[in-house]
Amino acid sequence: MRQRDKAKELEDRKKILHHKRVDILGKLISDKEQRSRWLVQLMDIEDELEELSGASVEN
Image 1 (cartoon, rainbow, N blue to C red):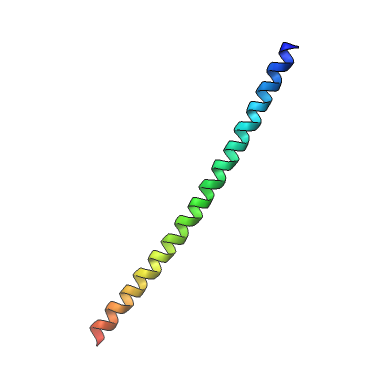
Image 2 (cartoon, rainbow, N blue to C red):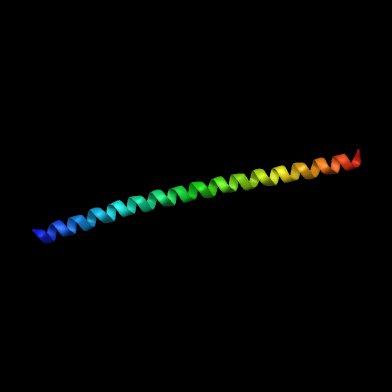
């Protein structure tokens, strides 16, 4: 009986850890996607600043 309880505890712990792992990986993916969006925004800003700098030189 005690052996079964121990096995159940181990299985429950594995499930908890698996769920935590999936949650953390999901957050990492979300953060990575957010960082990618920020990088694209920064590149757009840099491009626009470059265009504006070129326009002010031409005027």
